Length: 490
Image (cartoon, rainbow, N blue to C red; front, side, top):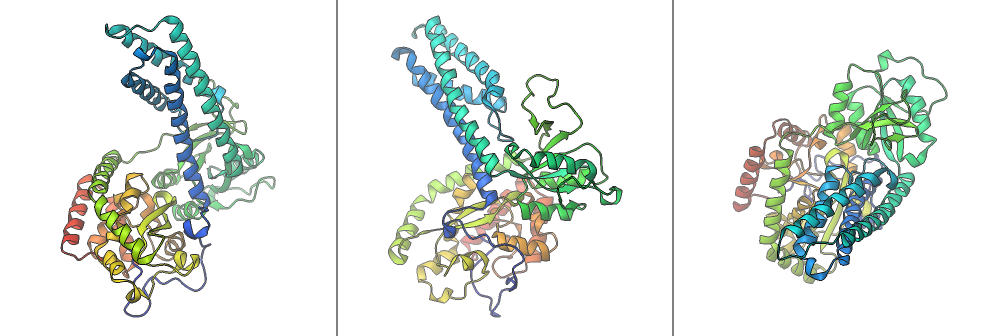
């Protein structure tokens, strides 16, 4: 099921052997680097942690606030419904988005208003059932007050931590617009580091540009889609500011940003700091107002994610005895460190930690991060070779799929070192990251695994992305399962 193997080429060197001169900085695996992930990985983890923390704060506030009501009225289903209702209402209002550092006072009307509405609905439900005692007005007011207080305290702490993290690790951002307009905006953003934005480049039509002023920061100017793709991967860009002023290639640039999952904010440097509409007063950076541009969601992406959740969850349950046997055998035969964790590059160039059963121990972090093949597979224990030949060492990646790091079907993820190298030497390789990476893919079912042509893999992967359909995913999964049954996967 995998596209990469640590088996030496019959000719002595694999076709994709890295050159002696490094083309990019080496990002060692997370576990091998003292547990410190890459900057982009830290940003992704911070976003997920922030959303989870907000959900935990809202859920805790909802549950604790029910302690005010009488035990006979505190039915578990009502408590669950209260917490779920608050979470659903906040999701609908966009109160879990991590697009920018926020202030509690800016969101307080939306948070408090939804708490009041949900509690009133709960009181109406209690009053509508004769077997349940109605909720007195005083108790209802106390519950609402306690709920608002706890939700405000919890969210205030999360917002404070989010602002501090944004100030320490600002998000690499590209500016789209005329260079003469983008450089002053970049200078203003750099003067306000707590905005959480760090300009790293300008997207502009080079042929139409005039010499920029000398007062702006020295940022590289990008003019082609290929330069944009390289900038996204090299800098871990997750955001772009769309300034006024159209360019002939702007639509193509926005399409590339969407493919890599970068958020786009419509930025108006000439407008007043705050928009006239109510509810948008917090949408400003360094005094400039902005508006998040709705992401262009690929049609069928919800179906693909649903397929991933159902299949990966089912397989995790069904294969749990196999996972346990493999883990115990490896622990007894090979010692501690059963699970192998390695930094890989996913959709949009975002790093994540890939999980596998450890069948080989690299000599150091440099080998793990940069060596394409390991020539001592013959010295492995027979059980480790068996895991590799049957792809059982890949089963742990079902957990990567379940939590959203990967998909069941997609281009195989590679290490950051090789992504940088292959993106510079093989046309179309960077475009593979337009969709989530996968356990298997179109390239793998056509025999492109292990020591095979990187250019061929990139061509098959891009063909899969360009012609994607849910049925194609199902077909690839069926063909992969058939190949495993025939024991041809290695």
